[in-house]
Image 1 (cartoon, helix red, strand yellow):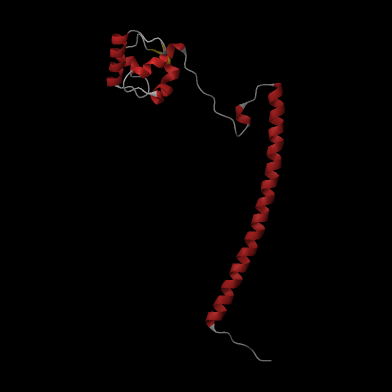
Image 2 (cartoon, helix red, strand yellow; image 1 turned 180 degrees about the horizontal axis):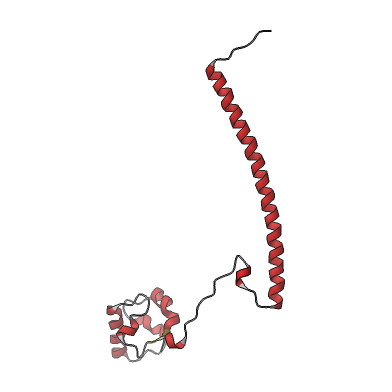
Length: 142
């Protein structure tokens, strides 16, 4: 029997191919394991959701029990609201996006056109648009 001696380049190529095949084989089993883990997780999540739905029908749902819950929003009390028809420039500057110039423009508009009839009327003041109104709407009062 004759023994074949392969050149160094060929041995290196075979070594690389064996490495690639072993990596592919390992990654295939890894992805199968991931799929099984995902399937198990999905079953557990669906069971958890069913329990939450059942609890919700009997009592108020606790947002901390569910991963899709929305954070609770803080409400602004009437004492914290800025009254458009009587606020000073300093008080108006407490609103988001309202500086000295816009506060003065609001007061000038109020003096020229009379009291605001609706809080939405603040958008009639130059420099105050729908976006700025939307950010401050919860803090505004007449």
